[in-house]
Image 1 (tube, one colour):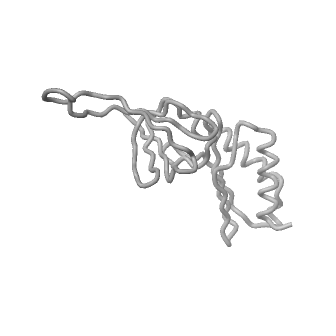
Image 2: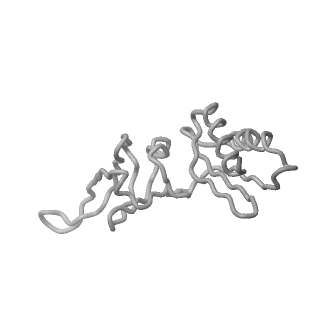
Image 3: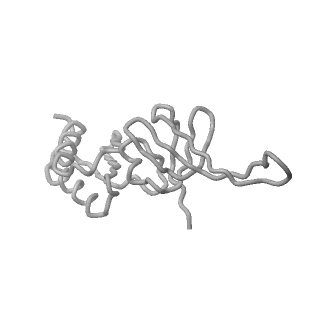
Length: 154
């Protein structure tokens, strides 16, 4: 069995033991540098990364395969790639690019097919001078999202 196939098999076995964790990205170059990016339903700790790394590394023979392995979380500012990543970010501010437009707002609802974000904006009053603040909401289907990122606020 090729190294890549072995690693993917071991990775799937590790995820079967940890159902709260899931794969975001996997890459392996010609020099056997393996990079695995994971996320979890409640985030990812360093211990989670170590656990996945050990589940793979301890099953491979370095005498047969010369490789390097990196297991890491997707990161706070990394784009959200899977629908499964959204629920843990409910209540946070997102920047979403969808069908040529960009919205920035608070993630208020997450379903199997879509997300809803809410934001405030100042618009001219219908009667008289000045502006008023209105709350807008938009529901966006996952299949129309080009990119979504968490906006960190300090």
